[in-house]
Image (cartoon, rainbow, N blue to C red):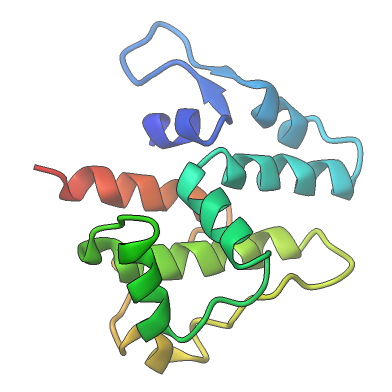
Amino acid sequence: MTASSRDYGFTEGYSKAEKIALALTGQNIVFARSKEEEENGYRQGLFNILLFKRVHDYYSGGLLPEIKYLKNTLVTDFGLNEDFHNDFYQVYQSNLKFISKFSKTELDTVDVAANPVSIEKQKPQFLPSQKLPIMLLFLESQRKKRP
């Protein structure tokens, strides 16, 4: 988890370090003076992950296409291994939904739980935590699958 937290820009340091400190993005969340500042901190953390930022920009921040077409784009335009497509979809959508809780207007998301066909009726390999932003979980799941 510490590696994901660092990758998202929430913390500095790693699991074997003497200390792990809040990075600027983490400070912006923990010490936010408003809901907007907290939202901006989480959004910055999301976009510190280049793949999330690139996909968000590619679709102009809008809804993702049907999973079939999204998967084709993830392979051809982003080079994402097919083993990670369902995890990517689940986490990306959950991240946007989490961030949208801070907004006055809902971001374009799909309720993954209400739309199981779009993720091929496959259960996610992890469940979002109410206390931990779901965005941290995608990188951890990728690290565990690597040889």
